[in-house]
Length: 421
Image (cartoon, rainbow, N blue to C red; front, side):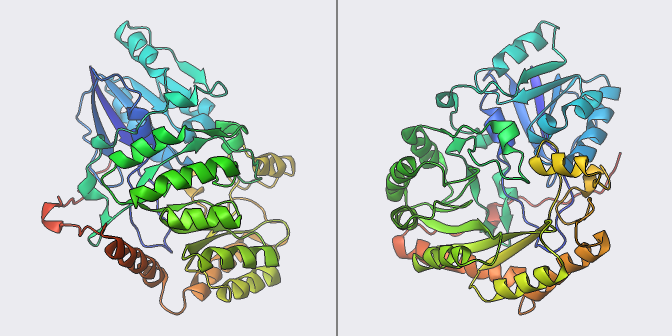
């Protein structure tokens, strides 16, 4: 049986330098596909989709809402050629009813221990329209190493710098944050993987730079101490979402190779200032992630917030516009208040206003979003600040003997033809 797995492309943030990390969802899913299946992968962001290909089954792994229009375009094309199409991934779970209109089958939930049955059904000619495991999570010990060998690794570099490999050590999140759909997708029970399994997977990854993509590394102190202690001998350099604001935990994270963290900045309080200060004192860089457009923000607040950010020693800042993704507390609130402006998913990229702000016009919020980016990066731009972070990690790698120069002679170049369907 031949299966083609596609990761659809989406529009990138114009304020950021375009780069591409190796996608995580497809390689985690691929690890659950039976070995006898002939599986090939295409990252539509970097590779041409062969529109004439005729696999037995076309599978779309869709993470982002804004990937859906492209996924639907491709799926409709292949279904018109009588090729069965199956969808999975986060955006499929969030938009299940709509996705059904473009698929022969959809898979909802985590696929560990479940996908063999899908293949058996397909081989027997009884593929089901829906496989719903959304709120029935598998045993976390079934989560094995991601199948990264399906990737064309030469594509994931920027100007000779190898991009980070993604890995996760836990699922689920006990924090039900208002703009986030994780509680709906992965549940509010924290589900840590056994630390030896996580370490074994990290050891298999040849890349020295990792992105630990767990929803939060602030959920279980004892588990974090065990994890970071076990990571230390690997000498990997890694980034993550917020880490528990605890002196011992942060110290261990730094010793385990923490390079920088994505730190949500929700206000201008001393709590935020001290958290960033502690991270920096341990040599951990900080990329502030800042939501613009919350109900408590007016124009003065946003301008003052940008001034605050300029003075707290952030390495990088990423500004995004509050976006009401499906199955989030935010979405429920804005629907109730009739403040959703459109459901044009291609605009759900977090850099466009798709709802009515409480204290601003949509146009003013868009203007302030651009102001925030332009003001914070007025002294050199995103590339220079991110370059400084990479310079830092390269120095650390050279100091501990783990630095490996990327060889561009081994890289295969790619040029998109621009052909559309």
